[in-house]
Image 1: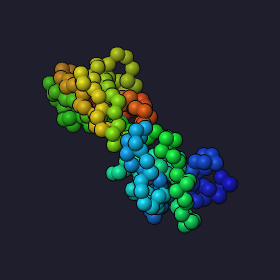
Image 2: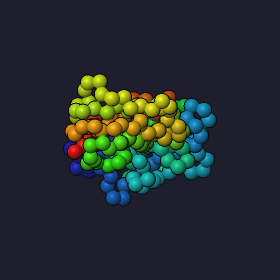
Image 3: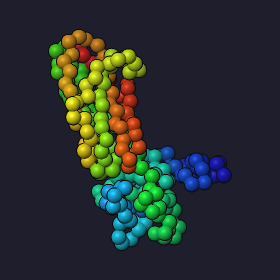
Image 4: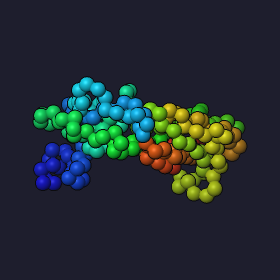
Length: 210
């Protein structure tokens, strides 16, 4: 079984989970589309459901059956790989109350970009991807001088650190008074509809000060 799936570029994680490690040109997936706010008034979108979409329309790589991703209307649930089989029925879409939380990721953008000179004032901006459009929670920022992000670091979390509609506020500014390589580290708490906490990774964006 595993040999056959490997030959197709697929990996079976369990009877209910199928992953294609990399988007392949022409891949299509059946997704169930939901509108409304998860946990409040979320419901299956009226009309055709589920629908077949190209892998490029899914904001996840790899694509994993049984997970959700944010879209322009709300969020979608990956139901199955479309291999040309008959379209699944709407009854196969999970009821809104049982759809699992989204699994967001966090990336950071440092302003200004490095390398920079001693005396530069900089701040970090966290970008949350894969969350619901109405994602809440909080964001925190820490600046470290090592790529393991160990030690106390400098807390750059803003006084108002609430995430609103998946948009995180910027960090506090920091003035670099000495040379070295530094690491901004952001952590998103998640909320009931978005798994957390998730972080930006310590060594993801080293910042060089000369």
